[in-house]
Length: 213
Image 1 (cartoon, helix red, strand yellow):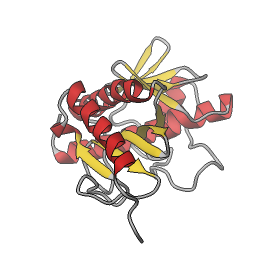
Image 2 (tube, one colour):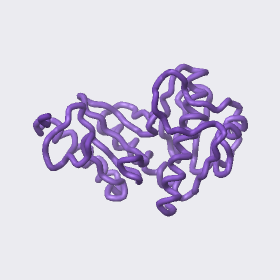
Image 3 (cartoon, helix red, strand yellow):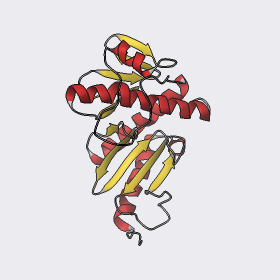
Image 4 (cartoon, one colour):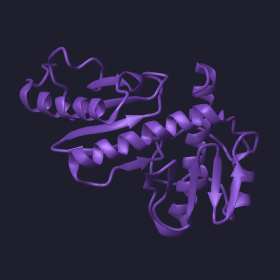
């Protein structure tokens, strides 16, 4: 999957593509920023029809390498103008159209495989279609005021991880993060382990007391 530097740089680049090349153009054309996971990567849910598979951007029959290209150039090659959604959120990945994407194919494949596993587990947990949100570049659902999802890594943990985040913090040894509970995806190597973590989080969210201020 590449080394830690590859993983962080690739995650940032994929976040930039998701936000600037997929979600921004989709919002301007179709009014939604929701992205989805699909076999081998992730994609828009409305027009324009764009996807990322491994280390390439897919636009119709075109397969455009991500590594070494600016986000603006990727957008132009796909027939869209790169740029983040405007007026919806204050924070994002921080990428700008003129920035260059640095993508390691192995790291990209690992991140996208984590999303695919997460999508299957979340769909089974909630019987709803998970959303890949471009703001924080995480895949998630919400059930009974509890967020469940998979992040490719961030300031909390630099590698892909699964999380359970009750809207009201719970007390107990299961909850190991400021926003709930997390587990690195490398410790949840198959569908059963990932579903087990989400199911345990669901049970603990219902059973554990709300944390006192």
